[in-house]
Length: 129
Image 1 (cartoon, rainbow, N blue to C red):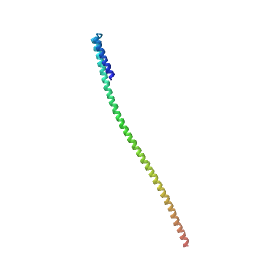
Image 2: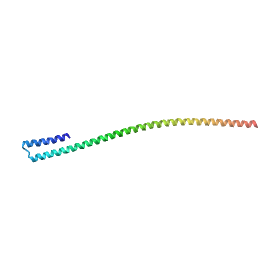
Image 3: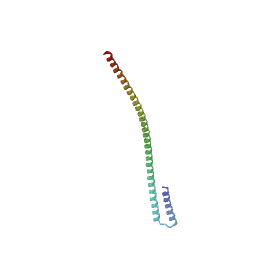
Image 4: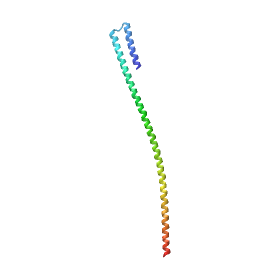
């Protein structure tokens, strides 16, 4: 931007020098000034466009930061959920083990009790005969 402005000022200086030197006509000086004015106008428009683009880039950067923060939060939540799921799985495994142990103990006790009743009935029949 500054380079363009410098070039325009240089064009104005050259035009002024030519006029003062007597080498340029009034028409050529006016054309040179018009070209310099047009270049200045284009440079200002380009600078405005650049500022607009910078504003858009800044907004995009802010949106990217928000998205990253959301992603970080989601990652933390997912890690916490995985930890809870692992803990729940361990608890289920422990409870399943206890249930199997209780079932085995119950079956053993049931068989033992059935044998005692059968044995007692069998001996009662023999004594009574």
